[in-house]
Amino acid sequence: MRSLRLVLAGLVLASAAGGAWWYTQHRPLPVPVAAFEPDVPVTVFGLGTIEAQILARIGFEVPGTLIELAADHGDRVAAGAVLARLNTISQQARVARAEAAQLSADAAAARAVAQRERAEAQFTQKQATARRRRDLANRGVGSQEVAELAETEQELARVDLLVNAADAAVARAAQAEARANLATERATLDKHTLRAPFEAIVIARSREAGTALNPGEVVFTLVAPESIWMQAFIDEGRAGDLALGQTGMVTLRSRPGRPVAAEIVRIGLEADRVTEERRVHLRCRACPTMPVVGEQAEVVIETARLPRARLLSEQALHGFDGAAGTVWTIEAGRLARRRVTIAARLVDGRVAITDGLPDDVALVTQVAARFVVGRAVQAVPGP
Image (cartoon, rainbow, N blue to C red; front, side):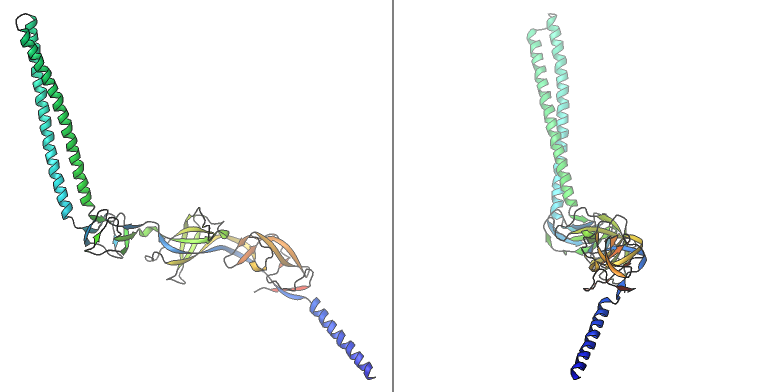
């Protein structure tokens, strides 16, 4: 009897275990599914820095000692405003010497012109005399020897005229050279004054009064305030729908939680071959106070809006190639698989599905290792 009871107990336990296994394997498994969401914004994310499209690091074109600074960090300066000056004593002396050289060249040119005019008058007088003496000699009234002498003097006067005309040309060339030298020295003197090339804000002053400068040394760094923009780097895999004029929200590192609306004004035509990113420039529509050039910033750009879509994590896709993948669905209460096309990839790592699934086919949002096609499941709202 005892053996019979043990056998019966074993059969009961086996039946209970089998029933439990069957229940766990065949009972409907609760799985979360995606709901339809209206008006889904499609955005891309990028990191970058605040830059200036127009930035100039300026200094003097000539060497000298810095004796005056008229602007400092943070100043707003007008185009052409004086920023700094070098010591001009030596250059002023060169200008004075060039002015004297020009006066001398002007006088030499005037003298050469007078000599040319005198030579012209003498040639005219000798020509008339030679013509008259030849006429008298031809009529037998005058001497042939005197006529020939007059013609010789006429030829000498003609040659003197040519020489004086050449001297006048040389004097004019010397005069032009003196004027050019004077203009050069005056231009060099003007280069001892540093002026703002455009309306700008001074963001750096690199030298102080008393410094001996070489040509090209940077004294000021200027930016045009209206040219401030953000340079952002966008993953090229998500940059395909970017377009000029699209709106982005820029958040400065120094202003967390206070994004500023901006607009795409330039999209780079060359991607970085190492980081595989594209360079995008945005300009704010209502800029705050002057931002710090070089400050890091974040940007979220809206590229499209989907009227209606179901959202799914990229991890829930199988064989995702950036455009399509295989998803788990619930059809007639059981698990199934479908190949779907992705409408858009979202900045939070989800994808939007708008086509390829009938409305009555539920989209599973979380995948489990025990999923098999045909398994009975029960749809529950996804997180």
